[in-house]
Image: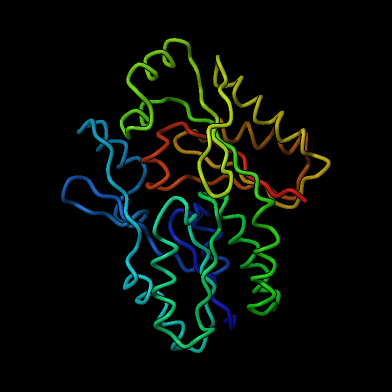
Amino acid sequence: MNSIKIFADSTCDLSADLIKHYEIGIVPLYVTFESQSYRDGIELTPPELYAKVSETGKLPLTAAPSPSDFIQAFTPYVEQGQQIIYISLSSELSSTYQNAVIASKEFEQGRVEVFDSLNLSTGIGIQVLKAARAAEAGQNVQQILSLLAEIRPKVDTEFVIDSLDYLHKGGRCSGMQNVVASLLKIRPVIKVIDGKMTPAYKVRGSREKAFDQMVSNALSNKANMDRGTLFVTQTMAHEDAEKLRATLNETIQPQEVFITEAGCVICSHCGPKTIGIIYLKE
């Protein structure tokens, strides 16, 4: 057992295999339909979420774990003598980070460190994976926190949203914008900048055209890319993700490309068939 336990929340979107291999602790966020709350990834899966949205015509609300949720998750490991590093969903998008900081103050100073990823989905996950591998290699808490501070601004997170339906249901675009985008087959591309979801550009035409643009963007950074680990993160688009992985392997030749599935919190904002590429710049 490592003396350092790495924690993340359910929005990090790492695969079950990676979470199990590196013994990463996961604190779930909440997804609420009307009066019923579900723990993301435990009591509700993305296909179940999409079915409920289709049935009700409404998006769920999402909520951060409470400080008591974090205390309950951290306590067993602190009692075993481990130090904890928790890497959170961006503080610009959720109160998750703030609630974890509140919880950390209930423990002896230095036992629980909270790090703001300033990212989402596997933009968090790639930081969590780096931290877990550093802990496995025997690095101490300060070394891992320094590593995280170094790589955080180097994370490139870009994804294509297939339809504006979920953004419309969530009040993030008007009905007219949704209709026009559907007629013209406009697909928005989102990047994470300074911890926020930022519309980067729009691609008019097929999904393949949007994917080609994402790959082209990644290739433009090839000379300055850390080609150790890349992620293709998707929801209900596994076949497209496999094609993207094959293209990335052929054109960039990284050491590894992981395909992961976005969890319910991410899905509730972006909708099905969303797909993204995440990597680190050097």
